[in-house]
Image 1 (cartoon, rainbow over the protein chains, first blue to last red):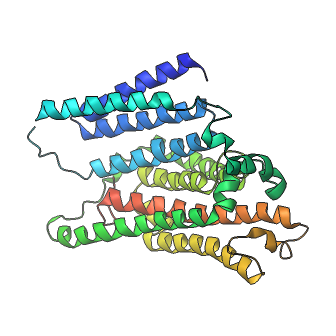
Image 2 (image 1 turned 30 degrees about the vertical axis):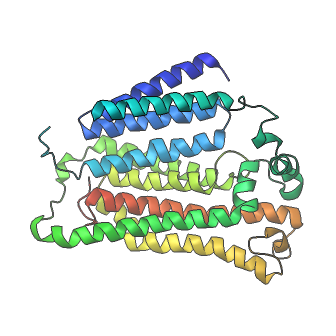
Image 3 (image 1 turned 60 degrees about the horizontal axis):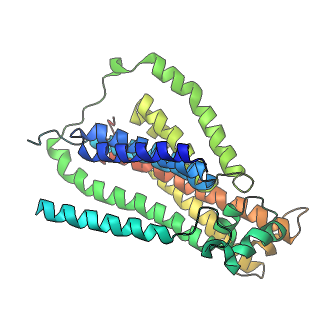
Length: 81
Length: 252
């Protein structure tokens, strides 16, 4: 475990989590959520949990981001705020 | 009210951070998870009992195979649930939402050709991940998701109908059921051979040149293939339903 690597990933994790909660644009939020999943995948790979990291990369960063984006494209932009 | 909830969240966060000091160190050999008798059994005995180097897969597909069978069924039920929910939406939206087919001129030839080249590579890698799930990281879930992602890439780069022409939603759900049948069928086969459900070691008379240890390794490969069938087709079916709003035409 390399603490510098951990520190960078954890800082970016918090940044991406806050961004994906605060961005008004749903498409941008789901993309940043994909980045968040990929950072968690890096963290798990770094903690030697390679199977979990592989699953997170395939399911979290890959397919679920696509599902979110496919759903966002089917929403309408008539919110006033 | 907003500040009250903020205070509650901060207090909970401080409590959680305080509790995290009691966690064992990362990689601590004496932590409860590592020094437990069952964990020690898996770590030391998996190689002898199943001839599988990656004991994560051995635990997942053999020691805890019943759990993984129902995880696969959960994925299948998720696909059915999304089809049911969006199918209800479809009844209402057919009236006022006319079908708008994608303009054929907005398809980029570079994107289409690149995806056409890279799709077989992704599918080959997915098959590798499934086949080597018990030797290296990977397995049925990951390989199935990667295979489903290659089908989704086909649907994104060209058109949803181009992908549905290869695997229609009906065929996807049938293949998902075939996957569960493979998994549960291997389990039932073990009962017919005189063992317990999902006890692969009794399968060795059916497989050429295997003893009861290698039979567990091959049995794991069989159930991983079943999982990959279900997961890959359900991932594609969920994408097809979500991107088209349940209408299965148009798409992104």
